[in-house]
Length: 204
Image (cartoon, rainbow, N blue to C red; front, side, top):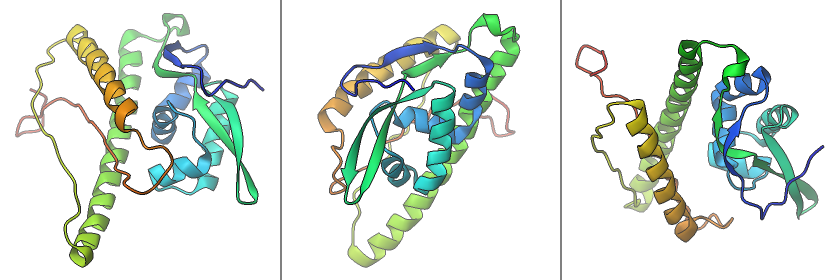
């Protein structure tokens, strides 16, 4: 069982080595876990971030570890329990041509996986917003913010450049404001990018 140093930087891109890894990425919850594990975390920490039970997440963590997409990077004692810390092997993943999948199938797998994750995250935002509205009714104003804008990303190359620029900007902000384990003063920040739809439902 491989183990990584939690202080070592993870790869920006990981080239998938087998179809089992690609199938794991298609699971929306596992895709979200990989995104969150850009920094070391335990099942209980992920549970608090995702509003899921640690027992359920442990199942997915073991599956991701089995196919080599996450590794153990340490442990710590919390009260009478020893928590295992996990970390993703990379920030993004590439499906190689050697899998023999058509370009169309590969792209559809990526798109569908991302869309399922978008639906899951949207539901979580909705649930959290309703709970915060209840808190606001009882305790007054709850600080929050929404940024909505239109982007011009006409082709794959432009979208790739945008994502690279966005990732660089986010890393800069996260280094300055990232939560360090304390629940006090914690906020959730999420960015979603998707094609605009016409009134009839088709893409513009």
